[in-house]
Image 1 (cartoon, rainbow, N blue to C red):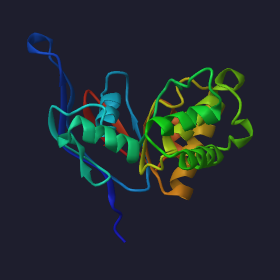
Image 2: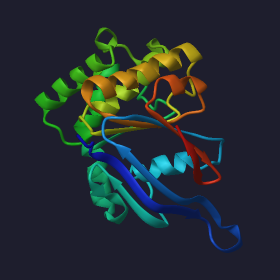
Image 3: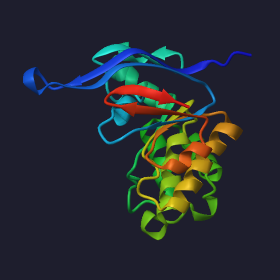
Image 4: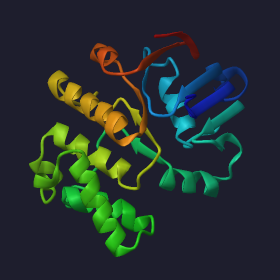
Length: 228
């Protein structure tokens, strides 16, 4: 059976600056990623991978081209529509954990659902389930300074999946972690894809990802130069 595509881009470019200060960061990206895959973008700093992630996450707009995510053409959406999409269909994980220091793991996850307008009962259940998926129920009442870096990143992942998105986008999610913990986080992403049917797209410099992900796209100077 043919898989539905989670992501499709056609002729995507992204230009920053004007006149003599113009920088073309993406130079025509054509990309198709089926649903239910764990995919990585790799490349040197400045290759365009973070810019591409931002476009897929509706955090930025392409200068030219089409971006389609979870069946919706997001490159033509209004700001309000893009915000709604992020709240319903996309989960974002970043290099820095960005947890609220005085809140427990549970409160960090529940708070995001609260500001998204979830009813009390639903957000309590969703926060608990998300922490259970990342194996942190036993640590749910601990605050960030009481947790390891790997545990904090798992809280950040729980926060990203609590609203049950179709797609997780993660920008260098293991960069602040030691290699052993980084592999554990990658295996968690693998589990979210295999057991829960999510699609996960991430950026990484870590060579260990190759054995865990389904496909790796290498970017260089704003172009996809290889995929394997």
